[in-house]
Length: 346
Image (cartoon, rainbow, N blue to C red):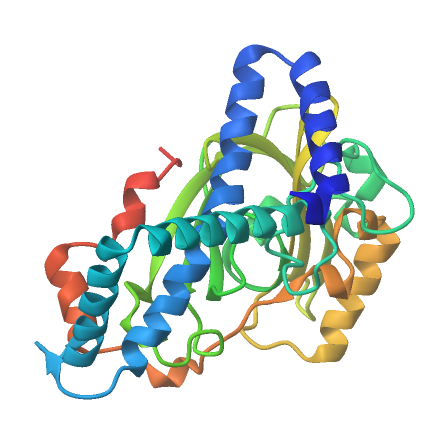
């Protein structure tokens, strides 16, 4: 805690302000949303590390899945852990210290290795000026959004860069499908993970190696401003602003910058920024141009600068689905569509 003492103090102060200026139900819902992502990130890291150790273990495998040497190693660790109380105590303290340190780094919001996917500051600052709460749509939307056409928004999009702590830097091949409905639209997010870059030995053994999907809804009120909608997903409701659109030679939307923001009791709890394109591949110059447009829109204080967004990795689509013993096991266990139970679009 002391390593990031200032960040923890600032967090607790703003959390108190948020509680004082919101209803009990609103505060509880917002806190649950924040806690889930704050906790799941540091919990995921040792799991990903252990998966790399598992698949680096040499020797024969049980059912072509788990190396015998890994099982033996786990057995030795289990015996030692159960036999020596000092080992249990030291291990427990070390793990809890790392857990608190990781969260503290997210609250600090300045660790470049965590930028983009684990910046969990309340009213986060990405420069000298602290921006309080969420901006109004007109404060961040560019002129390109005038006359926004929902029909051109629909269809298949590729995420290229993102600032969003509900996502993970280990996720790759992220896509967004937008289907129009009577009330507005339905979002379906497609993800895979962990990526071949972050987990070179274990990525293809993951239950998400062939993708998972999560859907949520977006509604558009009768008097809504162009490019502004209200979405409900991940247990909370939040506005979505289309900040900028770029059209192709046929006048169809080819690139989009969108921004989500959650404010509770005057405190900004979350901001999400997505750089999306119809193409799975974007040149670096085109991405830099999107950053420039985001800067012109005033999104840099909310995390849209290059150092505050992470690049979504893409695997060559020609390589096709992953087939191995682990994928057959996940299919047999029925976890392929595990995220479907979280569908909030209905």
